[in-house]
Amino acid sequence: MSFNEQDGYATPAAAVISLALALVVGAGMARALAELRITRAELSRTQEEYKLAAAHNGAMLMIATSARPPPYRWTIATLGAAVDILAEPEHTKLGLGAVSDLSDEELTRFGVDPIQLRSRLAGMSLVTGDVWVSDADAGATWRACAPSVISPFGRAGALPAHVYSEPEGGKQDGFWRAGEVWRIRAVSPEGWADERIVRLTGNGLRPGAIIARRLSRAAGRIECKIEF
Image 1: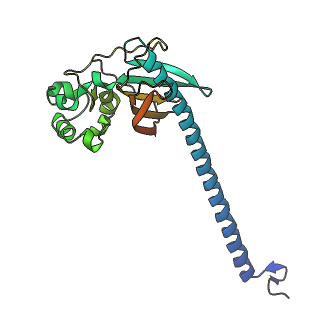
Image 2: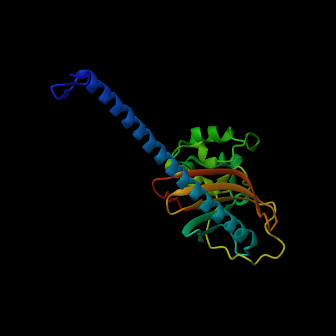
Image 3: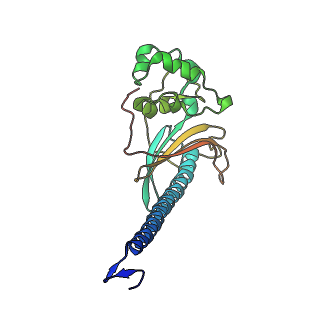
């Protein structure tokens, strides 16, 4: 009778060894599968970044050469996908300092507490890199609507009444909106959003310089329901 067999059956010691080996193999397979999922997710994210970056490049050229009044909303076909573009000049929006002049009724339309919001906005400054006005409140309505009408770069004295159109590229002659700061948001069909604050350069080879950028993914499309 061998150490590993007894009357045709594995001994308890052999069973324990076999179980240990099975656990090690199973753990290795689980780890390999987890790494494969992570790799696939990273590849998917990289592909989305390339797609959205290509859309941004095309959008900036359209914006810089369009004679049609902004803001703009349209779709760009890039790398086999239809990417939604939202583009708004920041100087036409209400500045942070002017938000304090809005009434409580106007601010509650954004779904926020007026007192707390004014306090948070008072602490934001371009000096400290606070370019994302959406960070002032976590509410869905504020995050969806405020960036379109309020900006740290804003110079307007009242909330703007936006009417969106599609840009008509190739019409500007030598102007190229040099020096203007814009918010451009590109959203892929898969729900990835690449939002950028850019300064247009007036250079046709490099029409925009990125001031700030955010890449995120949302479960569903969030649109502003407030009419200004």
